[in-house]
Image (spheres, rainbow, N blue to C red):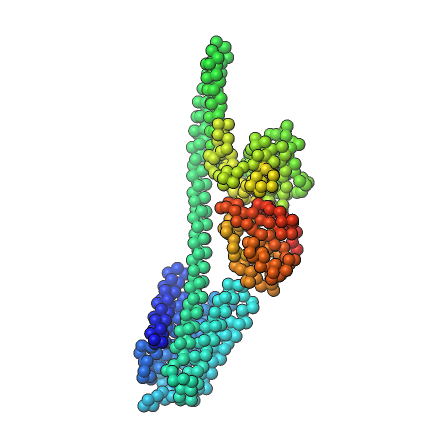
Length: 577
């Protein structure tokens, strides 16, 4: 039964080794996969010789082949571990391959082994060179792994731990067989070889690790490929919009001409004053419809040109908003309140396009019955976040998911084209920014209205965020229902959290929780408090739907908020490293 299990495991390792080698040669995931595949294949061949070629009688020729293979194990293992941990030292790897080559030459002579009628005995040269070298190499590899355990991140630590376990299993089997070979008899149990089970166990453990890594890389590549596809579609959309803009300008011009003729003749009929009341209503409808048709053609033209910026330059955002209100909403100036309007906040943008954005925002808010619109700004590193909040009628959860879609409108029959919000989004995205909407109605706290979070990148500033730098934020994935949406909100304001799988994975030496904002599910927050106390700054994320996640600030009277870019920055900006 044991022999059958060893055969199955050996065949499995050989097959998996070939898979890793082929995948790496064709796809170029990570060079460590290729080196590991070769290592694992050699390991499986070593075991196959014991299992299939010489299970009973030991042959000198095949013993030499096995030891030639074994001579290169330390070099290959060290090589792929260094690549994997990004600590490659080619001098050490080359030296170990040189030693392996020297030993392999010696094994094809009678210097290392002396045969007898029934057994093969090792010589003094073997006992004092190759045996100590293999033992020392295995110990040093295990020591290298253990030393790097404390320095590595969570993912690397898991890989190293499994290698340590596999290395111990390998070393135990090898040491027992070396002792038996040196003393010339089986000292522990009457078992042919302990190296083979040790090698196979090592191979299984490490194959699991590399399979797990390969799965993670494939998932990351699928995510990246999805982003590239989205970027490519966006590029195609921009190109098509340019073409649409050119053709729409011509069509728009013709529509205006026809609408002018229609409304002009209709107005002449109306001015004659000899029409019946019924005909007067019909002619007025013709004039009104012609005006709506002209307005719609203008909206289509704006939509086609939304992503094309003609005058992008440094501009102060608050003066732009104030000028927009004074020029287009003179009767509602007192209704638009800017918090701390003296802040000097600048972005690179097209004044006319951004003015169009704020005209639409204020127009929609006042049409929704808003009495007051408040605007505040949060600046952090290279992100400027504008929070525009009104007290209008707001919208439902279903409407919120459709808000930025083309031709979606809640004002059917009232002149709405369904392009206003879509044009706003296109203009903001053409500035490298992002807009998201949150309805206060769905909080069920008696409030109503809409909150728009508009994030703009800030360029050419002295404060630049270092590449790869992580923020004072921890996100624990375990138990979160809408993880992709949550991570997307962090990305909108360029906040990079430490993403942890479980509470037990937190290393307080690297992440002192008292200095961090911790976002987690209800269950994880409870476990955090039991493990680390209630002094930590926790924020409980609560499910919701595809586009809605709620958050409870555990230190702020358990108030429920919409999880938004504004919430993240407000709770991050006061944290001190």
